[in-house]
Length: 76
Image 1 (cartoon, rainbow, N blue to C red):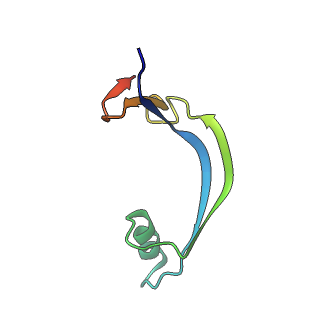
Image 2: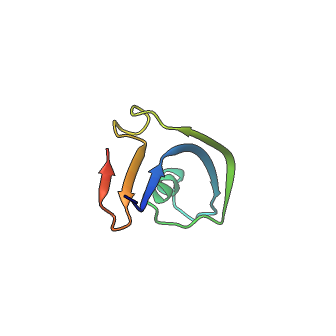
């Protein structure tokens, strides 16, 4: 039998985003970034690591998920 599947792996990658934000306070500017209320001016991948996240690093979930092309999750 043939199966058409795709896998999604969560890995450790560091992305740096630059922002220029007008806000009344520094805390307000931080909150705007946390809440995704502003778009970054630039994005750069600083460090890529293909090591899969552990369950602990991935909020207790498996870093590997496998799906059929109909988007039915078959693993885990």
